[in-house]
Length: 141
Image (cartoon, rainbow, N blue to C red; front, side, top):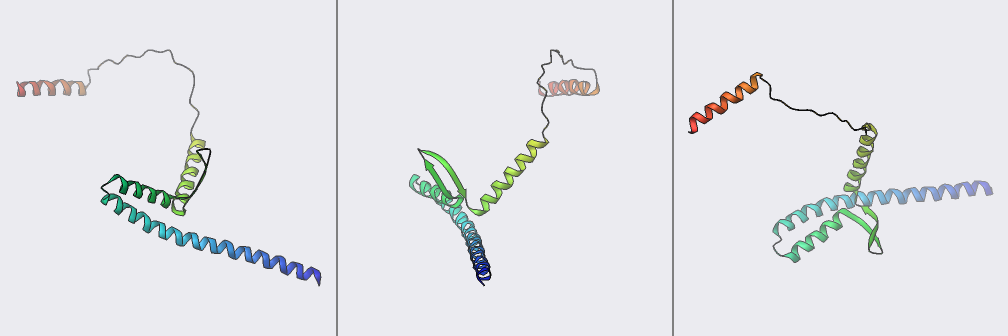
């Protein structure tokens, strides 16, 4: 009987923690909807801002829209937490950067001691260029 009650209590604790996690996700989604509205309001306020004080207030609002929390220690940023729409974009950007770095080939580090000279050739583009320049000279002189 004691084992069954322990199992049920553990199951109840697990379910409660799952419910709390789901509630937090729901609140984050609601918050992200509010954040989108706040971003739209910010852009409108920024367009209308005429004084430095109004612009500073708009920038503070913008920082609240992007960042959920900013942890500072000894006048340095230690940790950042982003709000949901931007957090997702940031994480996807990091994934793309990692895949691009993996795909990049290492470049050769050897130095080439060759000299190369570019000489104009007598192909048709050089002929077109010289006739066109001559034509323009005749027109504008």
